[in-house]
Amino acid sequence: MGAAENKEFIRNTFAELAKGNTAAFLDAMADDVKFHLTGTTRFSGSFNGKKELTDKLLGPLFAALKEGIVLTPYNIIADGDFVAMQAHGKALAKNGKAYNNHYCHVFRIAGGKIKELTEYLDTALVDSVFGK
Image 1 (cartoon, one colour):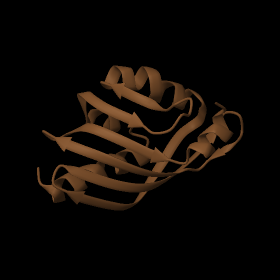
Image 2 (cartoon, rainbow, N blue to C red; image 1 turned 180 degrees about the vertical axis):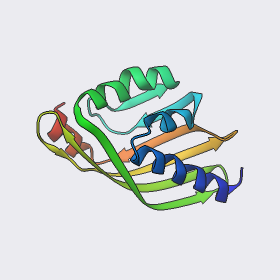
Image 3 (cartoon, rainbow, N blue to C red; image 1 turned 45 degrees about the vertical axis):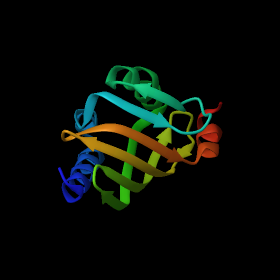
Image 4 (cartoon, rainbow, N blue to C red; image 1 turned 135 degrees about the vertical axis):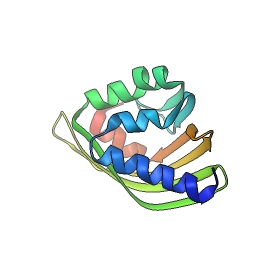
């Protein structure tokens, strides 16, 4: 796929996620995806493959949220296999604190799937809402 197709692929994936279709997000990823969440928060780290990503990041994160998170992209830039997306997230933690973060995601797309993803976010907000 070219840059335009990769950009549309990411846009469609997050449109489905906004509708509550979390399966679309996981389906968009290669089985051997490499996901890196920056910082030193309780959720930060590098995750290899969908299973590790789900077990060590997505499961614990969604368990701490009341009803999941809605990510709204507001800028998507693509160049070849890479797509950068800026987004605003809105969620409520089970502890009652608002978790409204801003993100920059950098994706590498190969074979119609997300092969690599790096997520940049306000780590101080993560710590203040979820603890260290």
